[in-house]
Image 1 (cartoon, rainbow, N blue to C red):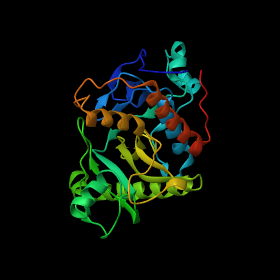
Image 2 (cartoon, one colour; image 1 turned 120 degrees about the horizontal axis):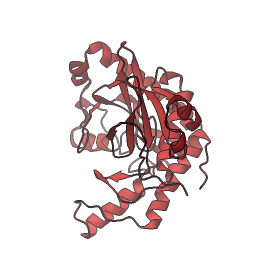
Image 3 (cartoon, rainbow, N blue to C red; image 1 turned 90 degrees about the vertical axis):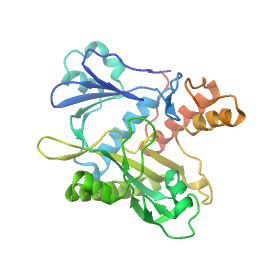
Image 4 (spheres, rainbow, N blue to C red; image 1 turned 135 degrees about the horizontal axis):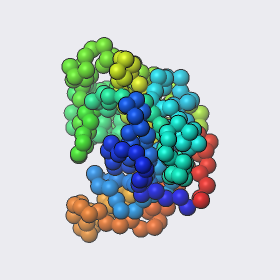
Length: 305
């Protein structure tokens, strides 16, 4: 079974995130390598989830190639042999790249998460229940948890280095990046969501919400960047089990969250670092969900190696 807790490549390491390493290739390009690390409640857990990094990378590569609305984007190559051919010095590290690395254009990230919500769930449900709004904008009365919205809503958020992102209004984005770029971010995000939602629905998957990230190039282009429509950036629900009025089963790390939350309720974990170890059955259930959504959406089956 292929498991990666992280990579160590002969390239300058720009940053190590919760999930992936970002390497500098040159002034124009970066190499992203996704590990199998998993985070929950703002902690990176000790046990990796097998295949998780491969799912994030291969599903993103699939969407970059599949969605018309994805262009222009930052992806240059995700095939290990193509990456080795394009970046000197990586031939001996090919195995670490297979399925989990992506060569991309370097950009300056836009400082907002471009969230699109098609259903009332997560932080949207929490705010709606309290005030009947989403990011300060009123929503129709009488919505239940997980109800489908009359139309998808662009619901931007700040990017938080620590803690949680915070929902903000569109006017806040306009003030931060200017009206023209804000309008472009909203238009592209809604177009991406609409195209992906229709595709996923044909495969029995509801995309409840998702977040996109964009970056600008020195010549002024706005590129879709980072991961796209993955279990870490989206809520995927099976349509055959959809029952509004409460939370829905999802193809993500919910088994991990449920296990840790159970320990907190039982008083056996205080919610502080270090997070407790995960039982093998929780790891297996989580990796199964990641692999399942990759197969359902992209038709890719990850084999144990």
